Amino acid sequence: MKSFARFEIVPPSLRERNRARKGSEALVPDRWSDDWNNADVRGLLRALQGFACWYCGSPIGRVNDRSPPRDQHAVEHIRPKSVYPFLAYRARNYSFACTLCNSKKGDRYPVVGARAAWCETLEARRERLDHEEREWLHPHQDAFEERDFSWSFRPVPAGRLWTSYPWSEGHYWHVCAARPRTVVGQRIDRLFAFFGLNDGELVTARMAEIHELRRNIELVANLSKNPALQRDYVTRASRAMSSFYPHGYALRAWFEAQRATDIAAIFRSAKSAAPPQLQPPSKTVEWALLVGRIDEMLRIYVVDTASDDPTFRRDSHAEVERCAYALAYLYIAPPGDEATRKRLRAWFDKTLSAPVRALAGSKVRALGR
Image (cartoon, rainbow, N blue to C red; front, side, top):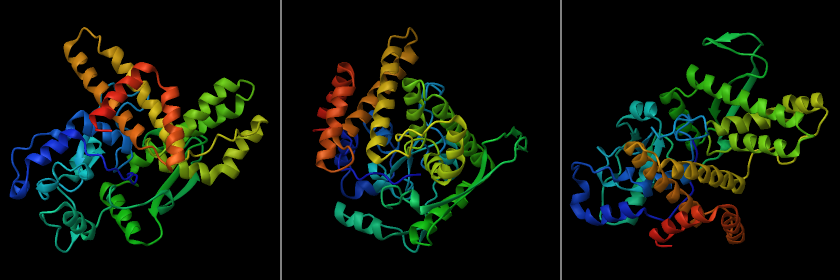
């Protein structure tokens, strides 16, 4: 789970939908049209959230070339539309969720006391929602970072069997808790308890991701005489520790916890020095890594649009649109101050190919920028 960056851009399809639903019409649950699945909305969520289910951190979308070729996850209404119909078409009420978490959550959104009610002006609605005593974390309303999570790690003995998976050296048993005992920390704890985020299957998944990160670090340590290939594995390691990627916070926490011990021992054994770039990515590096992966996805999907299968071809066109919108949002609102944003946009223009820039540029114009 991650706190979403603030954004002021309303996806065009939601802008039109909300313009059509004024006054008391916003309170009437009609036969919902799923405008939240349109390319401009899914593109925004990809730019905000990346490739991890907001609740459990499991992979969603085409994280890498081994992933399923099509998205199977849902655009989830954080405050359920059956309870808050006036938020059904509000982008600040959306996140990506895996099928399992979306099903488990259902129409739940626990609060203490009265729920926020609809009122005429947007400012008044936002104020009521901000003061609603919600029990769960909200990605658009709660500001939180990895320091709000406390991870504990301990090595698993080699050869131990756990949940039928044969663990070996380099696997770490771990659990997560919130810290300190703030309102945000309590909301994190409740989410962990409800979704079982410290239960067997998710712990197993995080252990496997940590083990993969450790293997990549071992390769970095042993490739000091092959700088090009070493850089590739440094990029893989950095990408894995990004908050946009599955279980990124857990991997980042493991790296920081083991930097002076296990990781240092890996480089001592290989008689090499750790490259300075081998570290958890900053927000600007995270942004660049996300742009790079979406660019790769878009180029794959463009090739797929030439398929002889009409269904596959149609789906590929839809994915191209979503990727193009995601790049447009990332181009419009990179992280940092104005000088940093200017530098990142220049990198974007220099790095991406002309056809990809043209696709993203068309969506920037569609967003009115």
